[in-house]
Image 1 (cartoon, rainbow, N blue to C red):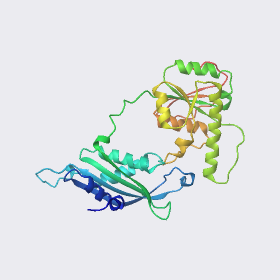
Image 2 (cartoon, helix red, strand yellow):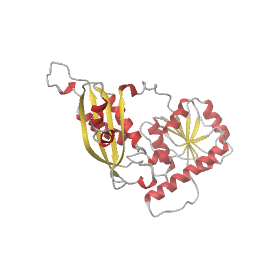
Image 3 (cartoon, rainbow, N blue to C red):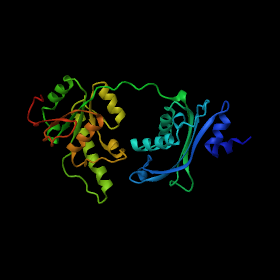
Image 4 (cartoon, rainbow, N blue to C red):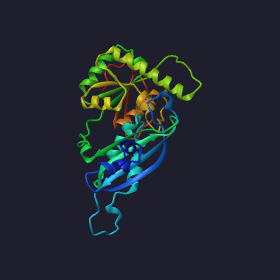
Length: 305
């Protein structure tokens, strides 16, 4: 019988066999290497590194007749597609998060009973740094909650944030129904960097400073940076102010809007949130944007409707 140390460092198939309660059919993917941007450390941002995936899936055994029908089995493509889908969904900091999401996606297929996922970083040191998890169908999350209401996205130009009319605008937004996600623009000079990624961070931080200025003017305004916080606020009809750094930097496909174009950034967020109504206070509405209803109000007008 292999030792526990051998099992720990051996292929996931060894662990699957050692912990099986009885005979099981398995499919596996070995040494699947993909490049991706991942990691919680600053030095891992803006660069891609190699990830190695080893996955074993225990599946429902095929029952006779053995008719050689590909639709009856769990395809190997299910594993590679799960990896690609999770790497493409958003930028992830932790290997543990990535492994767990891959396992959930595979276990959603009716043929899958238990899955072992090992993910390793190949470029972070002299050896491979990684995690391995095992998940069964009992670990699947419950049914997703129904989709909640969609928010209204409101852009406030700098003069609108400083306006004495702000409290009245917030009163109107609060009374009008849907939750409001406030986006702000930054004004004034800011440091200039010779490197594009550094300048992008500087520009995003300038917007976040303006967000905190707005939050300090009215206690109803809560600064949030993550999609989870934003979805929670929308569900509870709260007013929040968007701090954009996390969502913008964690989007793997990148964000086309430039942080120096805060209106464009607000429109991008509206599309990400599924919002249909965008109100701009103190800024001109851009040309028509598919799927969005755009309204503009001057920063000197007390009534928003």
